Amino acid sequence: MKIPFVDLRTQYISIKEEIDQAISKVIQKSAFIGGGFLQSFEQRFATYIGVKYCIGVGNGTDALFIALKVLDIDKGDEVITVANTFIATSEAITATGAKVVFVDINPETYNIDVTKIEEKITQKTKAVIPVHLYGQPAEMDSIMEVARKYNLYVIEDAAQAHLAKYKGKTVGAIGNIGCFSFYPGKNLGAYGDAGAIVTNNNELATKARMYANNGRLEKYNHEFEGVNSRLDGLQAAILDIKLKYLDEWNNRRRTIANIYYEGLKNIVTTPTVLPYVKHVYHLYVIRVKNRDKIREFLAEKGISTGIHYPIPLPFLKAYKYLGHKPEDFPIAYSLKNEILSLPIHGNMTDDQVEYVITQLKNGINAVG
Ligand SMILES: *Cc1c(COP(=O)(O)O)cnc(C)c1O
Image 1 (cartoon, rainbow, N blue to C red):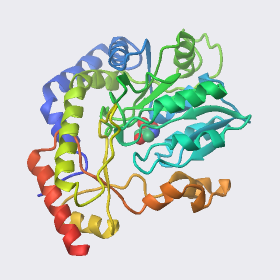
Image 2 (image 1 turned 90 degrees about the vertical axis):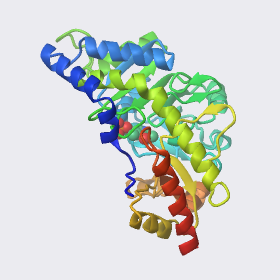
Image 3 (image 1 turned 45 degrees about the vertical axis):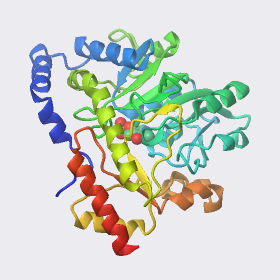
């Protein structure tokens, strides 16, 4: 059996008619930039998240960058984020001129360790970017409490957590601004690069919309310099169709996670899920000894796996200038050789999941 890590083709086939029709409509109407398809998706996505405003942008990295810009984060400022995430989170911070300040992860959830945020706050700290990594919400109550105490902005990186919930609240709607990526492999994925910013703040929403559109609301009336980072009509129309299926696909991911849990709980370290969150399993990350050998074994059996992420950000060459040592982020450092992401997506069959479980057991028996 061949088990791909993601399977966008099977998903497309399942909704082919609707998608093809939507794409055709956009082209017929030449609604490539702005227009009704974009508006429709933005409104629907805002409703799903439970916020007043959604601004489609070019990708998730830009969403984070624009969020920081509209909050006036600048050179001389510091922004706190987590050591284990995709580099886009910290790249966006650096792109504003601000300094990235990393915090270690919680060994159970792999999200930011909220007990270690306060010690990183200085006079220069302006914002915190929690990441809802793998689809599990970060500990937002503690984060919002620290943010209130020190007057910091909170930008949620929800790129891996579309429709995940923290104590009944949809992520992205809890902090000042929420940022989403619709990279094809995400839980809600476009057919190219795409992203969105969500907020309840009218002023921030307007500023973000302008910033993403060369600093204007009207043609040629540029009020400041921004960037060109728009969600295009084709992507918006595709996302609008796919959004209707997102809950169903997320629920399938959750069912698969349960099957993995039942099959693997006595053999590997399965994910710890906080009792008051809805995890949407962008990734199903286990911990296992001899990870690299197990991974090779699975590859030989046709099973694609991933590592998210092989090198925690502070230890990347890109952040060598920060001079961090393993003992600065002991949890992230110690887990990097054990984490393994198993295939999980909305179109995976029970047979495929069972095959992964069986082969993982075989692999552990074979290599120890
Ligand atoms: C995917 C991702 C991003 C960036 O999104 P792009 O659309 O690829 O720019 C940011 N943060 C996290 C946690 C991500 O997983």
